[in-house]
Structures are given as structure tokens and as C-alpha cells.
Length: 416
Ligand SMILES: Cc1cc2nc3c(=O)[nH]c(=O)nc-3n(C[C@H](O)[C@H](O)[C@H](O)COP(=O)(O)OP(=O)(O)OC[C@H]3O[C@@H](n4cnc5c(N)ncnc54)[C@H](O)[C@@H]3O)c2cc1C
Image (spheres, rainbow, N blue to C red):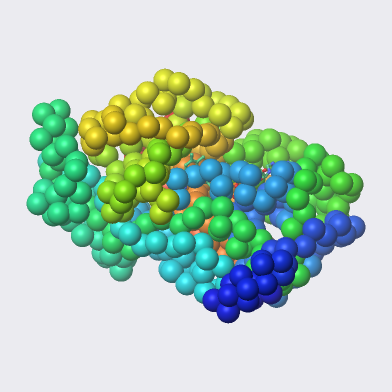
């Protein structure tokens, strides 16, 4: 069923009784050409592009829970391509370009809103870093604009500009950045993949990876054994646990990241704003809630819930930047498990096990990467060679010292 203004009107007149389910609930087949483990944004996008771009349609996505139950439905919805390093910029810019046409392509309203991402700076040294980043972006053909204090004040007059400790000196704006309704991305890709023949199988946990003569041949699941020509792992925070089923130890640690939503307010925050003197970022949803977050919790965990010291830390950062936050009531908070890699950059590559491929290490920036990640992982699975914009995301870079350390933090996953 195609969605359009006419189908909405038709259904409204018919009492909304004629909507078809967005995707099927198929029984698993005994064998697929490709099986993707993980029905988050990346796994579903991969399946969709496998079918749409490469014509590989005998594909299943296995999700242990329900579609959208992982980080794809838990993030703070920010998309951007304001990266510094040559290994990263082309990949994230390709993702932003795919976001720009995604809703038409999927025939699904994902509320892609290019309302701008503004990174504030508070010292002269930080200004230099942001100038460098902006120049790097522009050299790659990506939009970037350096704002002085007056420029920031025009966009966000409610900020605390004269905070003695963290005076605002300006900001780097990417006007094409913004937000996307996160769970609609999972639903849109699931529906579009299903329409191309992909089996999206929910409540199907992978419990084992069968390896014969050095190559993966199938998966043990809670719904029986499923054979596979190729297997792609896209399990985000659970990547290490699932890869361990094939005897692999990944350069990844899992940490909790929390997010927060306030009560609904009248429109006040025009785009995404990030604090440069602490870790705090905020936007406002179309319903009016302020959506914000900050640092990861800092200890390893597979629990999808966080702790109170981090709540306090994030709120303190927010108060230092915009004191009016102190009068706003917090409505909800939640946590997701982040797959933090050793250099803060992802992995889209083959593994030492034959026919087993890995998509992981997204840290807390993987939502914006969803379309390009799916595009590049599909390319790798279909052709057995990396896509040009994802060439830097090799697994062996950690052994060979060719890191893609965007933040320059070194091998400390909890700092990226
Ligand atoms: C609080 C928070 C805020 C964030 N904010 C942003 C942001 O603003 N911008 C941004 O770019 N990124 C953000 N991120 C990061 C982003 O959400 C993730 O990097 C990205 O969603 C990960 O990819 P995914 O969507 O495929 O993950 P997921 O949705 O987690 O998908 C992985 C799936 O694998 C499934 N799975 C795991 N093990 C198995 C198994 N054994 N068998 C079958 N299935 C299995 C899981 O159930 C899960 O559904 C944020 C994350 C969090 C938690």
C-alpha cells in the first residue's frame, strides 16, 4: 500500500479501518542468500539497499526483540556531516545526501528536518579547532559557516553569553544538519525492505553462529537453524556478544548512553545546539519537548538504563548553557547500549571468519550514519569489496595502527 495524501484522506473517510500492516510477519525459511543479524536502523537499511541497489532479495533480517527496540529508537535524532578527517567526511556527507532524499525513496514520513546544527566554542583555542574543522568540511564540498557572537545571538538569544566561566565566543554552523524522527527510520526501512521481498523476522534471537572449515554457514536461533550464504552482523551495542558466538573478540566496549526529554514547551530552540565547554546537546521536538543528552555513563554495561550521577552531570551542562532549563520539568529519560570502538570510528568490513561480515563500532554517532552504513554494508555483502566512502573502516586498522581518531582522544573508548 502506497502512502500519500489521497490514501490518508481515503482512510480518514473510511474510519481508518483499511490500513494494511506496514510489513509481513514471515516464518523463517531454511536458507537465505544473506542473513543480517540485528533489526536496528543499520541492519534494516542494509537489507533494503541489498534488495534495491544490488538485486539481492533472498534476504532475512533477524531481530531478537521488535524492530526499533534498540538504539535506533533511543537516540537523540541528530544528523550532521560536520567531521574533520578525510576518512570520515565523505562517508557522513554521503549519509546526509541519502537522508535528503530518504522520505521520497521509502515513501515514508521520517520527519527529516534540516534545522541546522550549531557547535558552540568558548575559547580562542577552540575557535582555531572549529575553523580547521570548517575548512576541512568546505574542502570536501560540505557546508559550514563560522559564526561570531552576534551570529550565535541571532539564532539563540536565550543562551547564557556572559557566563564568566564559559563565555560564548561563537559557533560552527552546519545548516544542512538537523533531526529525523528516529523510530520512523526503522519502520520506513523495514516496510520498504519488506516490499522488495526481504523477510523481517522479529522475536528471533541469534544464539549461535555455525562455522565450518573457517567459514560461517548459518545461525542457531530461538526459531531454529537458518542457513546463510553470507552473514552480516549489525548488532550495535551487542556486537561483541554476537561476534563472540563465532569466536571473535572485537576492539569494542559497550557503555550506556542516556537521553532526556522535557515537558512540551512553545518553540524556543530553533535547531540543534551543542555546548563546547562540557558535553551537552539539545534540540526541540515537533511536540515541544526538549530532547537532550551528554556523556556516556563511563562503565561497561549491557543494561539499557543509566545512573543518577550522569543525569546530574548532563543537567548541570545544560544549566550552564541555558539557565532557563532549571525551570523546565523532565518528562522521561532512558538509556541505550553504545558500541564504543577504540578510535571512535566504525567498522564496516569482512572478519577473519569466512562469509561473516561486521558492521559495528558506531559509538554514539551511528544514527546519522544509518543510510550510508546500510548502503556501504550492502555493497560489501553483495560484492565482497569495501565501498569507496567506507574504505577507512577496516577491522585490521587497530592491529596496524591506522586509526581514524576524529577526536584525537587515543585508545580510550569511553572518551570518544
Ligand atoms: C541515548 C542515545 C542517544 C543517541 N544520539 C544519537 C544522535 O543524536 N545522533 C546519532 O547519530 N547517533 C546517536 N546515537 C547512536 C545511534 O543511536 C546508534 O549508533 C545506532 O542507532 C546504532 O545502530 P542501529 O540502529 O542498527 O542499532 P540498534 O537499533 O541497537 O540495532 C541493533 C539490533 O540488534 C539486535 N540484536 C542484538 N543482539 C541480537 C541477537 N543475538 N539476535 C538478534 N538480534 C540482536 C538488537 O535487539 C537491536 O535491535 C544515540 C544513541 C543513544 C543510546
